[in-house]
Length: 238
Image (cartoon, rainbow, N blue to C red):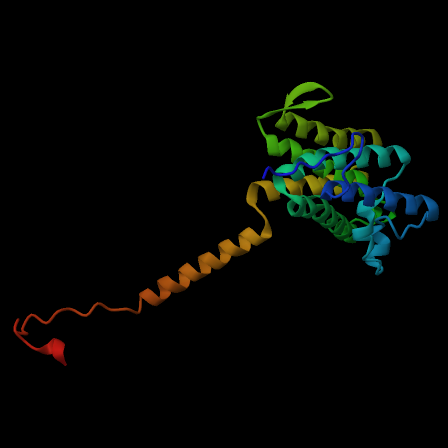
């Protein structure tokens, strides 16, 4: 029998992908923020240091304005969907959500030594969008992709995403508002170049096992053959 082919209706958007779920979560989280205007949904380092640790997770799905909601959701759904096709849903989630959370946590730690950071409110929608954008470009590397129909290499595509962050910091004349984006990009590059913490843990365990085997081998001694023993001796029978 021939395999059945799933017929999709034109114009329907698949919502069973990780990229689509992240985009929908961003829209819902941003809507909740617009309805409540609660600072407990965005990342406020001063509040996190006071005990509101959930903000490190909730800020990921909050945008600052309607335009950011639209473009952030489109970037995560379209570019994130392309990444998911090659990476798989789990890796996309770990990179998009996990690195954004880590960037927020590190931003909070910086607020411990920089009190001016505590007065800022951070929205994670563009942090996650920037991470997905740069990850997509770096995944292509020297391969060709396109930016609004313009053929560019993957590395150039990633630089464009980084350029948005630099341009925003330049116009604001302050690096603090883009601290999560900068940290997220650094963490992403470290992950792509050096590997995940799980890989490093496996390498450490392998190194430790090899060291233990070498240490044990130093206690082993080779038993030399006794030259005075006759060849026809029955020593092997005892």
